[in-house]
Length: 248
Image 1 (cartoon, rainbow, N blue to C red):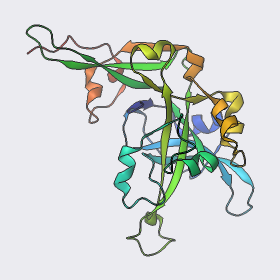
Image 2: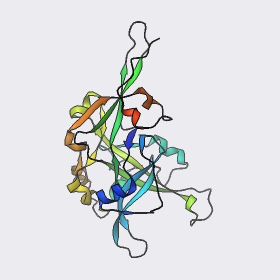
Image 3: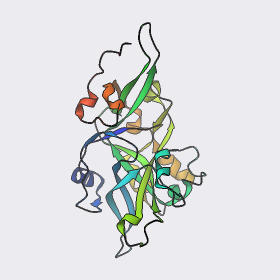
Image 4: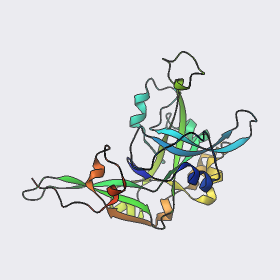
């Protein structure tokens, strides 16, 4: 799975990279070395311009943790941060988004944890690892997005009535990432960004063929500070080497 990741690039850098127009130039996200479920994250998506109807590429923020339109509560999203690529086209929670509402979620890399059993005189713990493209390029994770209306807000034109949320597609881990965890996020190669984001592209088989391992499987894997285990911690120091193993 992908339950925590790093996203440090700013709005303008991402807009230039993906040739996207900011949805709202006033939107701002600080660099985040510990992106967690329910956080707002940058996303790239194609959709119709409200005034002209022309399909345009936008960079906007979405809430991580997909909330289906029929969900009774926003809290549903905390359980839907990942969608399995093997079943995404069939599951009711994801199939409409897979057909029409696909996005890219830019990341520097992501974290996974390996349980370390208790040794003599010591407690068990989890060792975090940071997995990232070996060439340092952005990881364009394959995502889906959805819109949910809060029924407690009476007016549709009230911005607080609507929540736009997203999920990350995952698959069986391979290559370097497979040493750490059995699942990994999927990514879309730059040459396939247009096809993946095109809302008119609805063939499930063709869409699945676009899904690939991040950086074509050329990944760096390194143990990092256990401070990342707490979502309260943030900053580049989370990528520092791990501390000595905890004692009793």
